[in-house]
Image 1 (cartoon, helix red, strand yellow):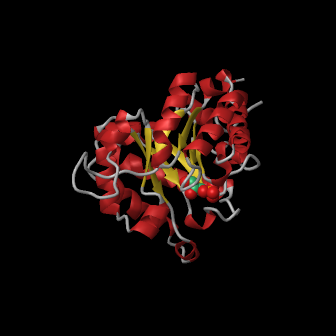
Image 2: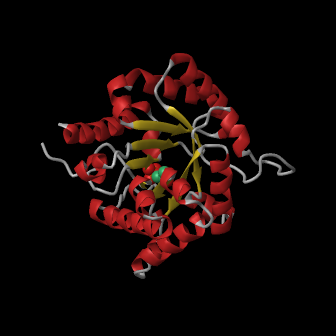
Length: 274
Ligand code: 13P
């Protein structure tokens, strides 16, 4: 069977499926959810697809111990962090603290942080630098609102966010990033972007990475789609050549639905390898 992933696999971009739990699951619920995921996730699946979970800060230590103790092939992620390593920043958590906990990925500039907590492009850029300083991989989120989309300003918005965020990164750093295209109107609405629209945006973002950091950076940067991802739409989104993974909110909270999405992605890459 021929799959549209052939172009992507030739560049050896590993798919990444990430579960952003947002402010859900206390540490006990987290324990159950990750243990359940560990029972479902097969070694062969994890060999083909990178999987990360991004619990709230209070759950990180519990999940770290569980993942390491039981050898569950899931990587630990965080949802946010501060730009500094330490200091008088009441309520904040530093990238250094996350690195010490074995965190591998940090979501940076999620639209909820931008809209609800005033995170600017400048702060997003500084946070990317801070995360990279600790050898963590940022998942940098960009996306347009419904109004921007209706006004035909999607590309202008994405370009402004991306150029603002990536200012100051080297081509190597750019290539090591994960970008997430998350249209705001698709988040938590049950109305995912069509594969064609998601591909248009992902291809556009990859083109800008190329303009900033060159062809190699564009080839290696991984781009996720996020916004109402389910097991039903995961495969068609992943089939698009510039979409290398998924950032999943609601459907990542239960191990069963998250694992169904991972399985759909695995099937897409397996048919590609065949
Ligand atoms: P949903 O999958 O719940 O739409 O959330 C998407 C999201 O914001 C992931 O970061």
